[in-house]
Amino acid sequence: MPKLTRRQFFKFTAASVAASYLAEKQAFAKDNENDKTYPLMTAGAATSYGICHFCSVGCGIEIKTKGNEIVSTEGLKNHPINEGALCPKGRSLKEMHNSKLRLTYPLVRKPGSDKWEPISWEDAISKIANKIKEVRDNTFEKTITTKDGKVVKVNRVNGMFSLGSAEIDNEEAYLYTKFNRALGVQYYTHQAEI
Ligand code: SF4
Image (cartoon, rainbow, N blue to C red; front, side, top):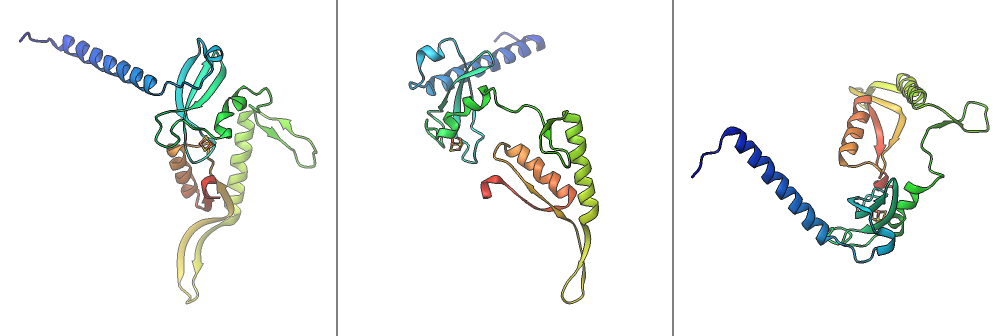
């Protein structure tokens, strides 16, 4: 058997990984080929796959894009949760992305004002951070006394409630939980629980 040099070995390994990745990608695309999409609308569009983030069901979704525009969203045929189906929210995901009305910057309504005004991301984040600090400082409780007079350490914030979103994924939900716990926020939940 011919001997492989170290360099040949790495080249061979990289080529094998790339080939198996492409084969898997093609098989995945073929399995999920959607016969419901409209050929004229989707001709020449790029295909990508993802999870609908509108609710906690987490349906698999096939997205066709042309440039920056989404031209079609369909359920992934082989996805174990939705098996090709999408509810109207998932189906209309493209409208949200393409909408000219979509808000892409933060707004603020100043005290006493009756209108919303644009604000930079830096200013919005600073304002939120300052408010969190102020509420935390004012409502932080280190200990409580039980009915039988025992002092128990609790280290909690009583003045804040935090609501997670179906728009965040598992990893983000993990960070969201960590963030709340680090602050001492005890009242928090996720949209899916409501
Ligand atoms: S398609 Fe509908 S049911 Fe599925 S994740 Fe999106 S919003 Fe939820």
